[in-house]
Image 1: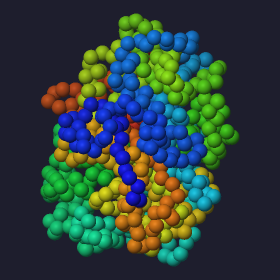
Image 2: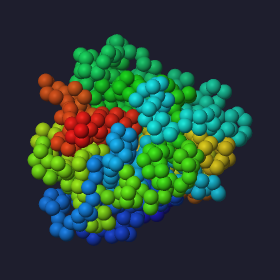
Image 3: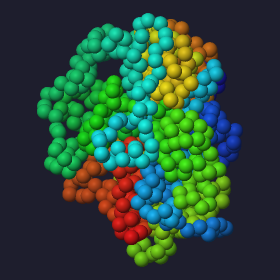
Image 4: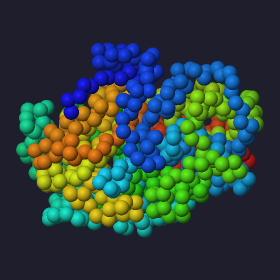
Length: 637
């Protein structure tokens, strides 16, 4: 843990002045995404270990993904490059993006058109899935899985749109009736099924707050089951303690604002303020308390803290995209590798030979991807990996053209295909650069979309006895690397261990946000990306080891002995950050997203999940459903 640490210079975008000043002293290299002199060794030091299996070459945003995207952003393809290879291919639909939005758009197009209609999905990564990918580890002979980003899902309402999508991809709910059983000492900890949940011992929460040097505690202290104790023993001031209890318990001083339907007066009132403003109004608590307690929650769904986000998001999960049961105890379900299990089912449905074996939950989750089958001539749906779209434009006036030209970069060469229609299913941050003939109204809309980075660090450990001996299976803290970690149990169809216990290996998932409370959302995103992309693997590795040693060293943890592997999954534009006015507009102006959702732009429709205001697979399905229907109704009739 005493190895020298160097800083890197992979920065994403033009930084605000404060970000540049902040980093100038820390970065020994010139600032820029492709700084002169950057070598493969530099990239290797930035990337680090990436795990095993199908996703080994695609842990978060990889070197190639970042390099290609930055070439697009920096204008390398503003003019048609020389030497473009025309493949001679023409598709009825080309879908740009192979995450949830793109794969589901392919599913809807395939379902709703005749068998002779063809579809090509272009994906910039080494494997499909977008953020719904996984990491794999081999620890003491056992294969372990963990999500890179997209984590869990909930049961839908019967006969709902979401239920039909799950059925179409072959999601078998019976497979989630069996999770790992406890194999360990007494007392047993009833573990959650998600990395966001809390375990229980005899019905009581098995969680703890850790306080270190920031609170004057060296060595640090643990307060177990802090909420049940009314935060007694926690080194907060009495005023902060009361405010935290009021927030946690939902004890309001003014009636909460609850809308009847999206777009009514109350929903617009919520959208006119930040979550932080709303909590100050509703609970009468201080802003610093709100930021300390709420940022870990809001950043895990929307990238930033409550100071920057529209208060309409308060009801995003419960009212905008509701499901039958959102509870941690009985509702949430999870593939061992997170929602990569779902994107694998989608790929298997679109291309039956894409994963070896039958379309069962176990086979699709566990068997290897047959990469050669993804892009075979003659099949109605093809997935072309390692292909970054660089120019998408109508072959003529948008409202009169019969085709769209789609150019993409693959292995350093630019290729072109023709499309009767296009679904832009990648994020807005790149779409606005790629669609070359985009009209001014839609382009101005994209300028009001803000994004923040996020990192998931998966740490494989040989055992978690160091947590069990503390009487906890989940931990929260307020300083250092990350904010929260827990132990979870897995659905048995995807793992080789039917049991779970403190003496068996597991993967601890650390979620790391880059919120900079008090700054505008744009500045927070830029500064966060600067930090994320300028920090080498070794620096984050050391931070993880030091954080775990500080918290768990006294209970027996030894970083050198107990850590079997670390994978970092960095996402430069992980979340849309919907600011006040994002959903319904302000001062009589339309919402930024309206122009992009109201109808297609010529033969191009937009389906990325950020249009809904939250990066969630359910939103991705709904946006793709809308986009495909728009094309079928207006273009491909």
